[in-house]
Length: 349
Image 1 (cartoon, rainbow, N blue to C red):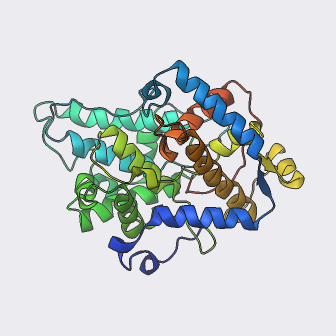
Image 2: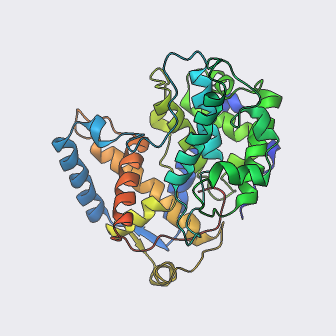
């Protein structure tokens, strides 16, 4: 498992930090220094053409949609507490959005998102008389998260009978989320968002500063998959169109995107690394192979964004490219059309 960097290293001056920039710079630097994973410019250009072709066939807003499958919690729009409910749902979701692959019964992201949605909906269903009020008794409240137990985690996440890996870690991270919200944000995830002052980068910085469980970085490289995806999810679900610098976020480096990019020959692995992955062998967390795969994924998406935006009308970001590639990768993986993804037992993706 990764060992998070001590809090003092992440909390010196959040106003002047730009963790998205650190991710981008460190990944580009690390990618140039390693030989385990290479990038094929020719195959990358082919992928650019394929995305452009799809974009011509559909409106871009239809090609790239955040909640296309409608897995996520979406309370009534007239609720005065709607922003808070969505903000906390997404923070709780992305705090435990990691490591699905070890399960033989295939507990997937859709299971996580939909089971958590059921818990959020049950909260206000049980208190129909006061739907516009927040209750500390809600399963998704800062108080309940701060006092989370393993049986409660199982009740919320495993309602469909599937097992889920690293359950103790998920319990610990939910406890951390609730505790931090109570100690620093008056128990409110929306307060955290408001403290970002309309800046997506600052929202990432705040997650890194206050929540050790989101500190997905070491000296050699930073990735911040879950911190950045949480901000991307907030932006989409809450329609925070006034937020600036969303384009500074990088792709959310996990295992599905490199799996797809390898299948398209954009990413090409050293033969020994490829053999380990194809044999379904685990790769140790924080090892050079893992860094190389994730760093190269960040670099590839940055190049895709750059080339896609050479067309005047295009306004792609790393986030929108990530959503498109992830959805495509999910479809192809479910159809059994992709080679195996790399396997790392980690809480970061």
